[in-house]
Image (cartoon, rainbow, N blue to C red):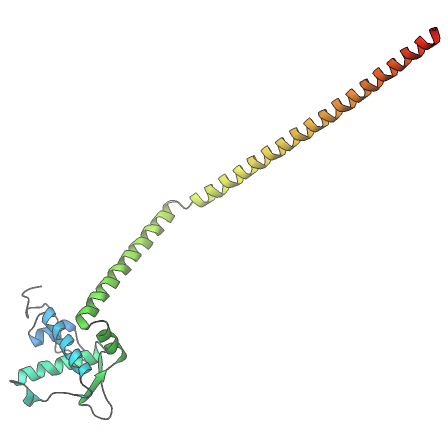
Length: 207
């Protein structure tokens, strides 16, 4: 990207819709500072506005050179129109206050800490997107797997049901055989008793 301070490869920075609404790198280039210095300026200005009950925009006479004043105005406009951290009251355009976003940023530790949190959030988002992409790829490669699993489950259920019915049939057959054996034994016992009675009677008659 060239040198650190101001040699950024930006387009035509003079093409603006209105003051402050242009590329961030254009602002940095015109303010002749690095991105780190630019973010530090935003952080310091945000804290300064927060700590002031009423923050009145500085005038040109408060700066050493007209260029420094122009940089200050560029920064204020960028914080208003692009970042949405501060706003100018309708009653007096020279008075600025923090927007809800500005108060949130300050509550999170300032602009620099906010950028770190946003970076972490972005990395988590990218990680989730990669995970979702991997899942989609896996599903596309194994689209028949759910069907195969369903068929396998159905086959196992049928086998288990068949085994259960077979076991039930065996138990019924065993119960029937047991009943038949019991009946057979009962009949044989009755026959034996009848034979004993018959022999006893014959013995009585012979006497």
